[in-house]
Length: 496
Image 1 (spheres, rainbow, N blue to C red):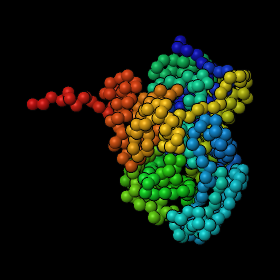
Image 2 (tube, rainbow, N blue to C red):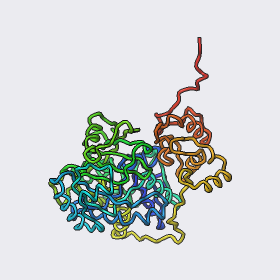
Image 3 (tube, rainbow, N blue to C red):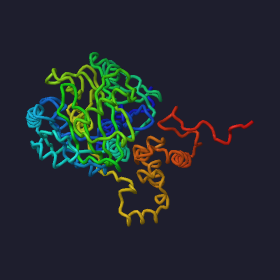
Image 4 (tube, helix red, strand yellow):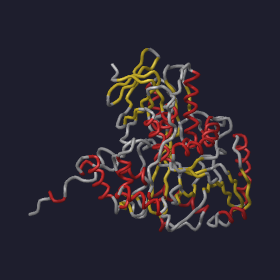
């Protein structure tokens, strides 16, 4: 017997699951989102290149191409409604030497077929003028004006918060285990925290989307093979790249990117290593060397002495065929209501450009539900606006002064590198989706991401978390149970 029954259960609170929840919250539906980890957006959404792709990469005729271009167009309105940072800076595919230049036209034609507007071919002189750090052997570039950058995690948080504020239920630390079936109809799910009934289930499980669909007896041939991508992050005080620079892509990858970020850092990466372990986010000397050599091809003046962090993310690469099976990295998305099982919206293989595609995928889910006969009645009081909390470092001095006068905690800097205040930390701990771990606060406020990488702020953040959550500091963790910072108070150590 299910503990409670919902209209729709969404498995996974990454960017796709959170946006599906946000768009579904517009309707008179009882929606539940299940997330196996201690916080939302900790999978593929938490570690990627943070680029909103223009749409010239996917093979024409594929779901990837359609969702990419449609999703890209939605980002301006979405960022305005949900108040996350997004900049439509454009991006460059850079050719080095005369041999690569001819390949740019192929990409441009592919973009035109996909409906990408605003693409311009540039010669080498144009590129050198726009990006002084570029390899002087540059022969030209394809510039796509609709490319952009964002903070992927802030997209997840904004969408999920807006969903919760509009009545969606979110359960973290709740892992999907199996479906509850009546014949060929899904009527609920089993989790580590009990059973929940539902009329519909949306599989937005990312790296585990194959496991979920196999539990329903679907697509036994479908497999997610994680593609690890490693990155370097550079100190923004020492190195500035103003643009998004792609190399000419190969048959297996879009290549090593050199790009700015919404936070002002330069990052380089990713490589593309297929692995089996869906939790392996370790960096390797070999992988980082590949990233470094690839980045130097675009920007030879890069210096590793300014690197302040390395990280790795996993892309949920599926094996659904694309319109051109000869191109390995263009396996297609799965977005369907399968005929074999009733009550399931099945999403799989949502790798790059998954972030860009996510709002379009959410709209497609609603279209599929309507086509399946679901009567979706809009709520008269649905609020599409999510109000962002203050970011001290982005405010004018007069605004900072007024904020401190209203709440003195905004006058106490906890993270010096990124100018994150105690007021911001406390606000996130008590937000609609509370931050309960150090990494949850890090993703929301950007504390601990600067030159010292948390060396200064961690003790103070642990203290604030313990105080605000009303727990012992021994219970405060980096990313959930098993990653606690402290084992005992120092003064408990016995001396002889």
